[in-house]
Length: 259
Image 1 (cartoon, rainbow, N blue to C red):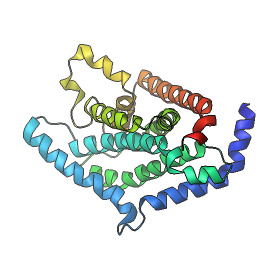
Image 2 (cartoon, rainbow, N blue to C red):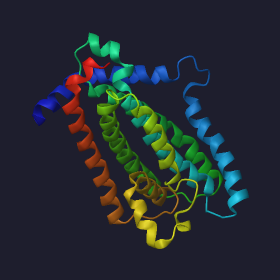
Image 3 (cartoon, rainbow, N blue to C red):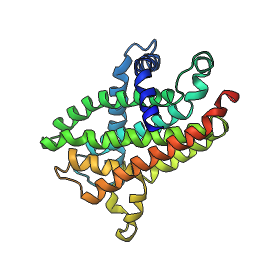
């Protein structure tokens, strides 16, 4: 069955590429700045958040603009990617009814378009980092490792949510609330050291925090994350992907009745 799945995937790869191109172009359709918005938007938010944090919290985090920007890029990627994947069956209903193609391709496309956005967003991230004096290091090249892990995690979670969201449209509203809560329990704009040490282990139950922590070690701290953090991050990604694929496969036979 595994071999059959691989062969099916390889056979439809050209079509998958076309779906990804279509969705990416559609995202910026009739936009004057186009993909530049993916770079300008986080930069504007970075300025606002930096001003608010330095004024209200009176705490100093080294290279705070890059600290926030990197964390926000990964968090936004995970949230926006899962949301796109969750709604991929409904949004592509007409094509699914007309063509016999693997349904999960639409989930992959939904996540991949946001992955491309993250890659573009790394340009202003590195520009900001250089401007504020973040030491350049070869370890910065390793930031693609946590980004890939976030991609795998997002795809898995997106497929899981799609499996249920196709039938339960209220899941969109519930997930919107979950995203809000998830934002505040993830140290994106605040430092982890404001949390009492005896409770910090709870944050490792948050996959997004683990990915962001590894990203910051490579990009800001010029250090290698612990083996434990790497193992935990990899475990979360693989487990979520397996859960997503399994759930999606179990439910997809009934998608046609609900889209």
